[in-house]
Length: 272
View: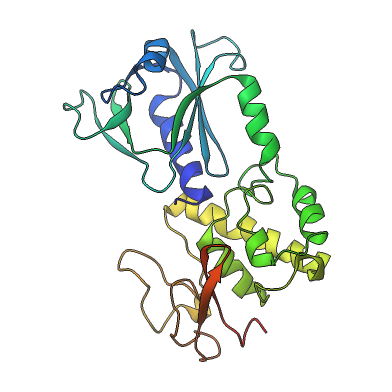
């Protein structure tokens, strides 16, 4: 499932491609046809992200207030993806849930977990149940700290809970805990305020890099050597998907297990 930086990068691209334009919206697959009919011909005013959720805002004109217009909520889930091509676009291929066509670029959405019209109340309810998103300027880390500092759940599970921190997924979870030297099994109540502040600051540092480059970069320069990445098109990681391999720092084997049904990776030596 894409982590938060992917959705923020998508929002920026789509804002650049469609912002301020009157767009054509269709649903070649048909599952979104009634909703697309209401959006077709409106002005695409803004794309923005909250964690792993993408919001498109539409209005009837370019100058009116953005709030109060129609919105689309997209959650890519495991299989969802956008593809882009110049306009005029070729006939759709596969199950295209939503197609947006601007003056120069169009995009097709396939396989999302959610693609639905939203009201302002729907968006308020979504934001209320999400934790702070480190990639948003309005994020309040105190909300996450209050939850973590009073919870007996493992910090490795808390960082993956979107109600605690929005946008953090398995890779960022594993890597920031390694960079902080924190055992992922420690209960939230044992995490000091200084440790939390360091985790939050590291997310503020790492996640914007993912937005800018389109890929996660988590290795410090002095450690960016040795064994290749777990996949040819991915940068190196410290522990993620490196079970049994030598730690890039101490040389001991990386451990792995399931934590709340998700794969967890850590170094038992560096994160003692």
